[in-house]
Length: 207
Image (cartoon, rainbow, N blue to C red; front, side):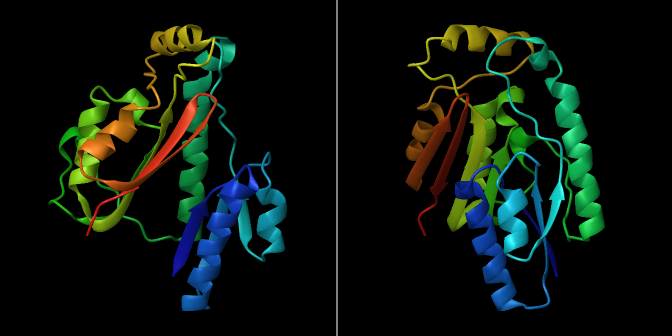
């Protein structure tokens, strides 16, 4: 079995990935672990120390101000995606790619144990409809997680950031949007982490 784990930057991101790797090795000592990260994070130190193979891709920070970096963002994302695909191909991880409409996912209710969407909801036309579809295909007892943009009410540059993002087709969400959506859908154990213009929201479906 071959598994690719992505999580880098700080120890708070790397260590959970390493804990998953250790658990997988305990279950199957023959499992092939590949960690995915960037040269900027602590993964360059922590992953080799744990004895796992690390593959690096180009980091793609989201600019906080409407500068030239914001215009170059799509090309940088595309480059990082291509590098990630190359890592997956070389690692031989078993995956299944299904193309469909995220607003009407081609899966039955409660199909998956875990559902996630990282770095996409701010680009789709109906993000809340997509999020509700993610909840629909999640099994009872499963976990859902999203990583998306954040326009913090307390940020004095909020209107500047939101206006710049709108110019390039990026939607900004307040910190209550997905927390409230998950809560209204009956999800529990909702947790949220916010950093600058990004937010991570996770929850579980009772079961």
